[in-house]
Image 1 (cartoon, rainbow, N blue to C red):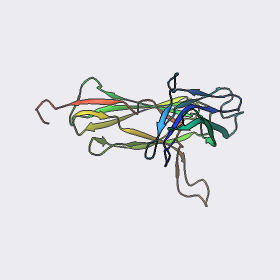
Image 2 (image 1 turned 45 degrees about the horizontal axis):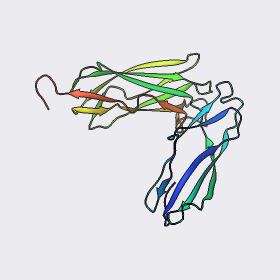
Image 3 (image 1 turned 90 degrees about the horizontal axis):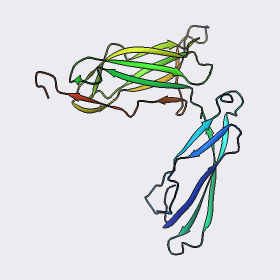
Image 4 (image 1 turned 180 degrees about the vertical axis):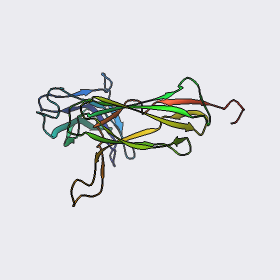
Length: 226
């Protein structure tokens, strides 16, 4: 919710979804007090989408309707409550793959020393995507990728795939893990009209990176380099 000209109180915010097999879990504080909103201020609400595994990608519609409802009042007259609501569509809401990275040695990572980055791709729900491209998207001031930074793996008849890469930290301190982008990959050359390979990144929500927010403590090298 973004404030405009008026100075308002918001209270009793909730979302509704009538699709069977989809639940919206309220992750906001249970005793939600009224929130004041004004020009230049944005108020965010957090909800989790839970999908029944047996219905995911099979029985559930591609688009689900969600209704957001809240009550508001002016600061001058907080007892006079009015209703505000809006409807929006959710697409690509089912997590298809999970990405997890681990750095070794994770207990002692030194500046400009090569470390092993283990990447694990796990299939969460059944889906038609077999060939996947992974890309290591790292800040060039923080990490250097030694060797390949992208590749294609096949998830045919397997539930997970592991890849080993070499990276080198270029700065000391607590560094964010190199980011991984996962995309659908279509090889070219299958017919005369389609000679080039195509890469289509997954929409936000279909790939969950469980270690995206992790940080690695990098210390100076043994020769005292800072």
